[in-house]
Image 1 (cartoon, helix red, strand yellow):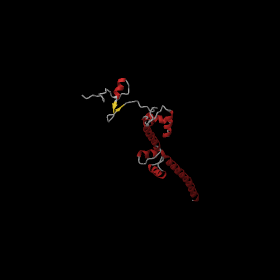
Image 2 (cartoon, helix red, strand yellow):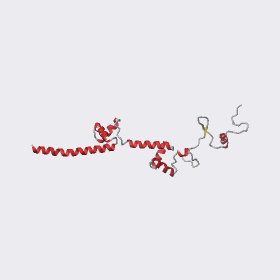
Image 3 (tube, helix red, strand yellow):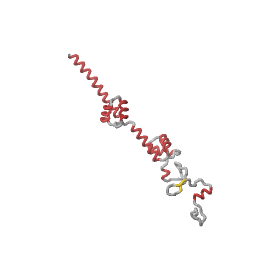
Image 4 (cartoon, helix red, strand yellow):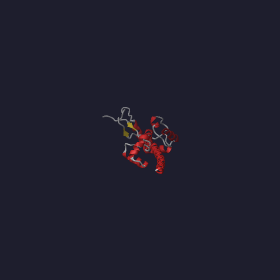
Amino acid sequence: MHSRNRFPERGEVAPHKRLARRGKTSAPRNRRAGGHLAFQIGRMADDKAKRGGADRALIALTEKYEVAYWSKKFKVTPAKLKYAVKKVGHSAKKVEAYIKLQKHRAADKSRIALGEAYEVRYWSKKFKITPAKLKAAVAAAGHSSRKVEAYLAAQKAAKKKKAKKVPKKVAKRKKAA
């Protein structure tokens, strides 16, 4: 008969079984690939007893110094950091990726993508110009909506100056005739 104990001659019991006999709660609840026992311990974002990389990779919202550190590192307000942690979890990598994505989306809103038909329609309507004029303005000023807006305003001002000069010339021609 094959005994389940590792050391049957000494009468020893596996460590996790010893804990279970004593009524401890850290008995294994699942197995990882490879046959190693994994203890399910409630991971805290900041366990003062742990100083390793696993603790550094987590954001603890309950600690003011950590909120200040991570807010400064990611260049966001503490409120935005807390929102990001609630959205994606306490992992610093996941929070960083989420914040980068949000910043990218915010920056992308002010850019004009001529490759997308809905963008061309939107910006043409917003600037009250034809799609062809929008494409020409983007080619001249760049893809930034602010630069395109400034370019179109300058063009409009130049057009008004020309419009004011033209009627005077027409009036002079009428007087000469």
